[in-house]
Amino acid sequence: MRRGAWVLVAGLGAALGLVSPAGCSGPAVDSDCVAGESCVCEGVGDCEYVCDGPGCAFTCMDFVACEYHCPDGGCAATCSGTGSCGLACPGNDCTLTCNGTGSCELTECTAGCTLTCAGLGSGEQTCDDPSCVTNSGL
Image (cartoon, rainbow, N blue to C red; front, side):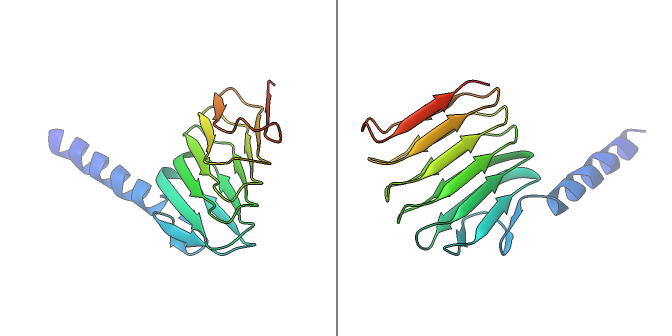
């Protein structure tokens, strides 16, 4: 009976590996996102994208912990899953919208960024410029 349980666990692990985060060009672990394109992280696991120019759109769903980087600014990220979600935006003018139960963090932005927390999770923004906005509550 014990061997059957291990086979079941191994099979489940393999199945979860097949539905791990997918994005623009396959598994989204340390992947680039094309400027102007929408890149999605879904499934189970960790996901990280770097936008190769201004204006990427990121989506984080399911049970994924997502990290997005937007060096040239103008990016938008929407997080609706249970995992954590972070957007680093040194290029400024980014938007992070959190509708899930995980924590959200908007960092490295110095102007023009907006963090909106509409879910049950927590949100934090490091920008203290008056042009940066934090909206919270259901």
